Length: 172
Image 1 (cartoon, one colour):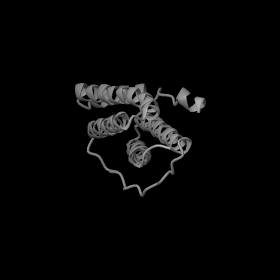
Image 2 (cartoon, one colour):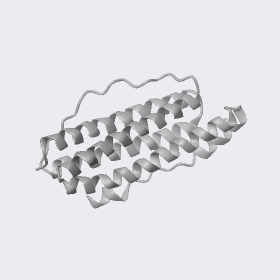
Image 3 (cartoon, one colour):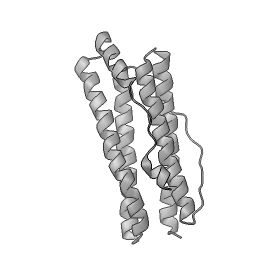
């Protein structure tokens, strides 16, 4: 069994991942209301990925003899001024999640919990991809200055995103 500190941090991260899914579902709903179905699709896939992340942590907590503790989720923002604002918030959120995972990894090393540290390596790599994806889309939005034709082109591009469960889920 892991230390109480590590279990508490993992539970906090589990709840952050669940909030992330809620956060991105709100963004999906916003874009659906704007008839930007490609953007909505992007965030629907993002929601599924966040739920996968939560499941991985949920399963890991149980695997190491811990107890999962679910907390109340706060309501996410539901109104946005623009697609650019949405992606600014998404990138900021991903950076917060990255920082949180790094803190758990550091604590695991301090506690000499190499199993948890190793488990978190997948998340560390995943977060680098998450931040890169949000940043690229944000830069495209800033480049097109939300010109309607540019938005529609980007909407079409985002409609091609397909959900693929992480291979690590099949390993567990």
